[in-house]
Length: 493
Image (cartoon, rainbow, N blue to C red; front, side, top):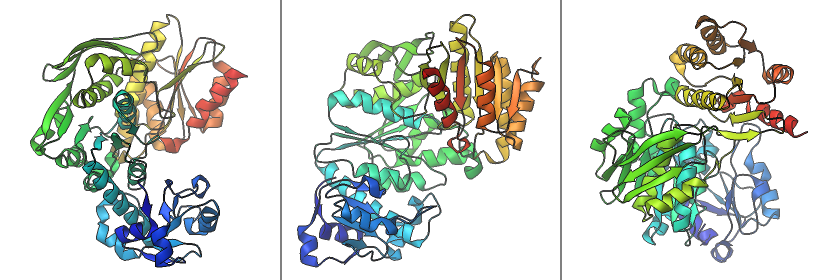
């Protein structure tokens, strides 16, 4: 973060000083990072005292102070130098930024954090910072990582680790930027109308990327049209001097051109795309290669990530880099070495016994589940006689469509000729997935339904053979990441 005095931060967020005098607050400078985990606080940092599901950050204020924190941002006095923000701060910031239910103290601290991030972002943009915003129903994190990779040869980049894309993660990421930062890449998620508009107001992007409109969080939104309306809030935030990068292959995204004053660049595999991929092919690990075509020229691209769905993500990243001055050759070189940077997202590892594990257990929705299964099928076919295993958990937040979508995934596994399906969980959605697989074609014993990850691991331990390919995928709440890690650990022993 840019260096600011404790007094200046209090002024920005509308807070009051506690356990520190005005003179001392004016001289004490926050030079470290902003942290919501007291264990991560270092000298000169600012600690956010947030209430959590299992603990209250206010109880760790003394530990943060002992670690060298310059101050604590809190909702009440905590006995150490702090900036106390009243509930009115949350009301002033607007409810749209708050995606999750938090109590009054949490809302006040989050709103203060947003105010601070907005002030810092405005100062850095005035100094030349370029902000890139990314949204979509699926692929946000992978694309954010690819964008960061293609921009790094052009300057210093700040991007969030994993999926820091909500009312806490986005301002936390913004406050990682300094005067030396050239590009700030932000991922933006939503569960309600207005969420993305509120996030974009904190850090208005000059380049916006919209990937797709799918069925993720359908239970929250109610329809794809409402999802499209929400995702489109990002392009509405871009000024006329900026650029909106839209997926030409998704009609709901392409139509967002009518909602922005910015210049529009379309990407995809259709003829309507300004930046296009031709001659797409997948190797034995489902790593795509294609010809990148753009107004700036063409280049041969070979991706280090897995799955044909990554072609669209790579095109969006390429479009951002080209807008920032990269050449097609520079883009191709950066993409060739840009592997998965965030954990549990299409991570591919082969054990010593030849078993390949695809760990995609962080998130799942119908679109990403289909993409993962198709990548699994490609890897198995490329190996000739390799058996394929799909170990799948629940796709969360699909609302009334949950049963139907899980049934479709089970049926797709059969149509793709996946050798074995292990359905993890006993709820109605997982029963629908198992039933769909059994009812599709001649499948029977090929689909196994187990109660939990321990039972799934037992099946795999008993039946995996050298050379098999295993996809582990579910929403993060299903906890299948530990299963994938266990499979890898066993292969290393």
